[in-house]
Length: 244
Length: 96
Image (cartoon, rainbow over all chains, first blue to last red):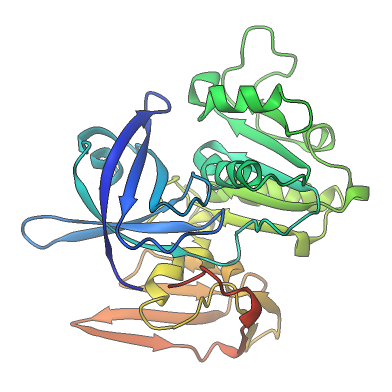
């Protein structure tokens, strides 16, 4: 797989620390929801750094993709992508990558998505892919996030959850909740899994994405609730959330 | 941070391994040479805090794959896996 030139065609802030970049990629072959790309930045002295970012957009074959990048305090790449990069800039990109953590449009079984923080990004790609494909697969999202201001794609998710049959969304806040929220702030637990995920009888396929500690915890809870390991697919970001 | 959480999934090796393999290795099933467990390579535990990358079996921790970039050469050690099985019916868009 070779490096391709990608032009930044739009930028959009999701939160105070996360930004979506729309990229026009030369000779982009198309992708499957859940796949990621590697982005390479090279300094004038030749030093280069590569990071992986999930694709947030639906697979539309016009050569455009979107990635959403969370800025990490001591990151090498993410501060540049979230603060410095401008429309018209060119990046180097390799992808699409990965054939396992993907949702394909011919999947008809119920889908359980479990996101921790910026782990929402590839899962949003799946939600958007479902919509663009006109799929009737039943989707459910359990989205664990530090506080309401950290929610990515807030308006789009709200619109989706207001449309009867689309995507059932449950939020879990770990530090700060909205004022009238019934559940105290805290990490996800067994009662929340029982309330916010598909029942076992529907035999869902689950996709879990987030920092490594979150994915370990969420996967343990799903297995304890009776889900089969073979039907749980995971993507871990590492200890800090830094993807490298 | 707990050292045991210093890994990601085998998924993340897809880009680097695409320099070598013509098809997507992350969705292939690998069999651990130590414990015989069969898992998708994407499910291996991948360690990146090294000059290259190391993938370990998610069941027993045995090293499955090591890759190092040294002065323009790529060294790949696959002896931790007995077998890799590729499903050629689902390779569309996986690599290109």
